[in-house]
Length: 264
Image (tube, rainbow, N blue to C red):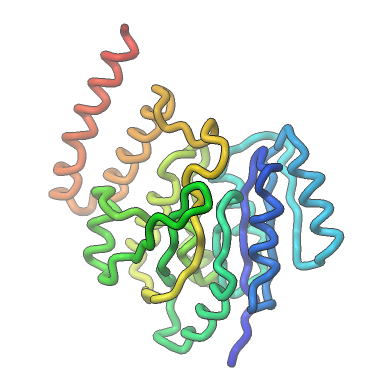
């Protein structure tokens, strides 16, 4: 069986309370031919020292420290630029890999030689499994659910072929820190990739386990960021005018309501 190098890109910022568990979930994989690229977006806690301590124990870890805070999009782009693997996975720094994730993936590489593989993932709250999520196993329906937001997608449950990312010049939009992953996925699907749907577990998404301050989507600022993300998705799909105009109406209503709120 082919044993390609797999690059795991972990952007992080002030995650001292959970970064070690995330790293260990990768190091403990049953498949060992991997590298971990950790991009620290100028953390102000001791995240960096914890990463360096892990790096001294395992030479598969590569540590990149941004000299200024640039956001999660640019952190992931740094990972893409520096990855050496044949395949790449993005992992949020507060989520965990299932132990056999990479082994299960490599075992199905002979099917279609895919550019992208969508996998199952688990949603957990306070260390209790609350849901098992499966991707829509049809490319047309997947695009539709990504556009209208009805399908929950987790960036860590998607595997990318590096040649595809590089040849299509795919990158995350810098400055967009909400919805950046959905926009990235949609842009990739518009490039007509070979897509597989893997029926195996990938990541455990920690919903509600960590400090909620960094996941607060209720502020006015973040609501505007969400609006911008959705609008950019619609603009990306402008080649489909009907989808664009269906999507733009509720966004304009949202913007109008947000502007009214700001004036108060």
